[in-house]
Each structure stands twice: as structure tokens, then as C-alpha cells.
Image 1 (tube, rainbow, N blue to C red):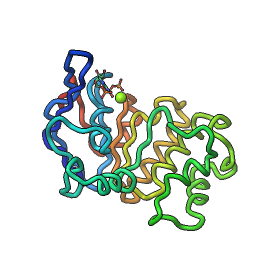
Image 2: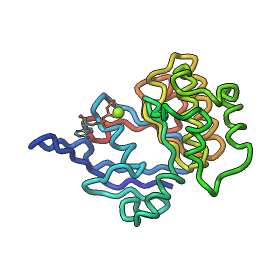
Image 3: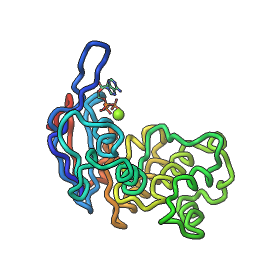
Length: 215
Ligand SMILES: Nc1ncnc2c1ncn2[C@@H]1O[C@H](COP(=O)(O)OP(=O)(O)OP(=O)(O)O)[C@@H](O)[C@H]1O
Ligand SMILES: [Mg+2]
């Protein structure tokens, strides 16, 4: 499904170069729920952004079904980012002036649009009564579940989650992790960055990064 071959990423900080990832390789199967762990600054988010097609590696390849994500033309790359991967972040990144329903609606791609689909997912995530509320009117758990529905509304093959429970209490963490696990059991691939041992318990594979290297 996903093959990451010797990727490196160097950030420029003023005149200094900082190697955030060095020669990292990784293979992800369709049925995987992969947890990426490691200390702060070890390159976890950088790895997730590379997989999501959001930042260009300095060397190495990210292959999705054998296609190099960074050699795709702009139309293919856009399709990959909108259709094949879904993102959940620690800070939710909901659009403040759109309702729960509208935040999800704008992420829906033409080909996956079905009547009642948003409502069905909202119902599953205990959000249906809140569909017309704005993000500022939601609890943190509700915000993150909205972001989760937005991430999966177009039925991506891969869900990329960067510390999705970082701002949640234990109860809301458990609800969200159960939803992410169900996405995996229904055939979706999950890459999850987490510090918390309780969340890595849901994973089927764990990799550790330290100073930008896989250990
Ligand atoms: N845009 C950037 N410009 C310069 N340096 C960056 C940039 N993004 C990340 N870095 C640096 O690269 C390193 C790896 O960052 P990254 O965000 O991948 O770490 P992380 O493992 O996700 O950390 P955390 O657990 O704190 O989220 C860090 O030292 C960070 O300061
Ligand atoms: Mg991070």
C-alpha cells in the first residue's frame, strides 16, 4: 500500500540546516494500524506530512501503490491528498465560521457523495444533534470527532492522525480511538503519531523515531 524508501528531510533554520528525518524506510500494508512513537522533535509529524504529500522530501521516495507521490503531476497529487489520505491533527483545524455539517461537507469529494452519508457518520459519532453548531460551541471531544468525520467522509484509504488525542480527556480519547480502530477494521490503513501508551495499544505495528532516525 505504502512504501517509504530512504526519505530524508532537512529544514533550513536561518543559515543552519537541521536534519529532521534521515534515511527512514518503512512499509505499510493495507490492514496496518501503525503507531509512530518517539521523543518530541524526533521527526514524527514530519514523517506524517511526507506521507500525506504535504512537504517535499530532500531525498528518497514515498510510494503509494507503487506510484511516487512526489513525482505525480499536480492533478494526481491533488487527488492523492484529497481522496487517498485523510488527516486528523491535535489542534482540530476546523473552520470557525462553518458549522459541523459544513466543515464536513466541504471535504466531501464528488465521487463519494451519497445522500444521508454525513448524517449517518454524525449519528455514529454522537454528533447529529450538533450538526448546526459552530466549532466554538463544541467540547474538545466533539471538535475532534467532527475533524475525524471530515477526515473520513471521502473514504480515504489511509488515515493520518497526528496526536489526535493530545487535547482530549481519557474518556474522549477512548471514544475517538475506538472510532479510529473501527476505520481500520473496516479496511482502512491508519498511521498514528502518539506519545500516549494507551493509544499505541490500538496499533498492530509500532515504529520508533529518535533524532530523525528509525530505531
Ligand atoms: N518548518 C520547519 N522549519 C524548521 N524546522 C522545523 C520545521 N518543522 C519542524 N522542524 C524541526 O524538525 C524537528 C522535527 O519536527 P517534528 O515536528 O517532525 O517533530 P515531532 O516528533 O512531531 O515532535 P512533537 O512530538 O513535539 O510534535 C524539530 O526539531 C523541529 O523543530
Ligand atoms: Mg509532532
